[in-house]
Image 1 (spheres, rainbow, N blue to C red):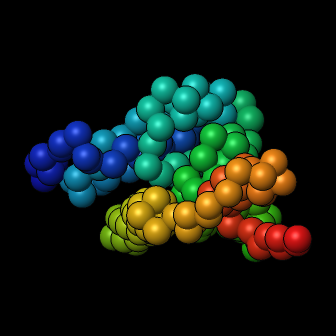
Image 2 (image 1 turned 180 degrees about the vertical axis):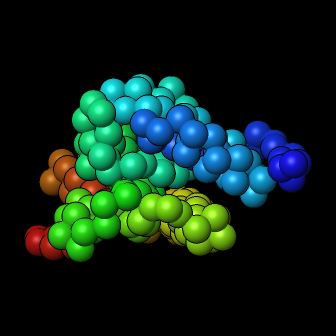
Length: 181
C-alpha cells in the first residue's frame, strides 16, 4: 500500500515527467506525489512540448530515449520556453558522452535508470529550490532597481533627452554601458 500523497496547493510545483514506459511513469509520479509535487505526464517529445506550453512546469524530468523525438529535444524546447527551467534527463543506457552532451545543452543533472527513489526526490527538490532562489534573486534585483533607479537628471536638451532614453532602454539589461559626452 502506498503512502498518501502530500496535500497540494496552488503553490505546489509541477513536474513534467516524460517517459514512454507507462509503468515507470506511474512509479515515478507516485514517488513525486508523495513528496508533494503535481506531476504532468507525457510519453514522447511532441506531447512534452505541448505539456510545456500548457502547464509551465517548475521542472522537467525526461527520459533521454523516446519513441518520437528524444530527451535532448525536450531539453531544447524547455530552454526555448524558459532558459532558467531546470531539466533533468534519465536513461537506462548510461553513457558518459550522452551525459556530457546533455549538460552542455543545459541539463541540470543526469540520472541513470533504475532511478533510486530517494536520489530522485533529492534531485528534484534541489532543482526546484535552485529555481526558486534564482527567481527570487531576479525579483529582488528588479525591486532594487525600481527603488534605486537612475538618479534624477535635470535638463531638456535634445542630446540629454536621447541619452536618458538610451539609459532607460539598457537599464534592465545586465551589461556594461559607456556614456560619452
